[in-house]
Length: 177
Image (cartoon, rainbow, N blue to C red; front, side, top):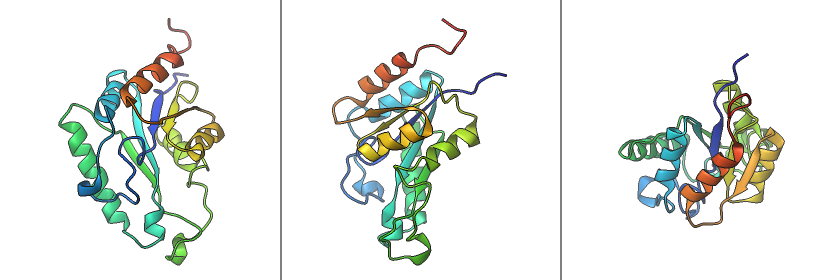
C-alpha cells in the first residue's frame, strides 16, 4: 500500500506570526522571520502544510469563527502572492474557562490533545512516520508526541532554517534513498 505524503504541522501564533495575544485580524497579524519562505519550502519539498491552532478567543467571546476563517483566507492570499499555500487549517475553539457554554468544554482537539493533528492525518492520508510539528509551546510538542510524530520547538530566528533541518532529518521515504 502506498503511503501518503508527509506533513509539517505549523502552530500559528508564535510560529507563523508573532503572538500578540488573540490575533484574529489581518491588521494584527505580523509574519515571523522567513515564515512565508518556510511554508513555500514545505510545498516545494512535496510535503503537506497544515496549520493547527488553539483559538480560545472564540470560547472566551473575543471573536467568532468567521473572524478566524477570514484571517486564514487572508493568510492564504498572502502566501499565494509568494508561491506558497497551506493545504488545510484546523483550529480548536474550545476552552474550559470560556464564556460560551457550548465551547467551554474539555475536548480532544485543544493542544496538548492531538485531535487536530489526527483529524488532518485522517483527512489527508498523511505519512505519519516522516511528519512533524513546529510549535512554540510545550503543549504543541506534547500534541505531536501524542499523535506519534516529531515535534520541534520554535523559539524565534529563522523558521525557514528550522523547516529545512527538520525535513532533512526526516530522510527519504522508506524504500527510497
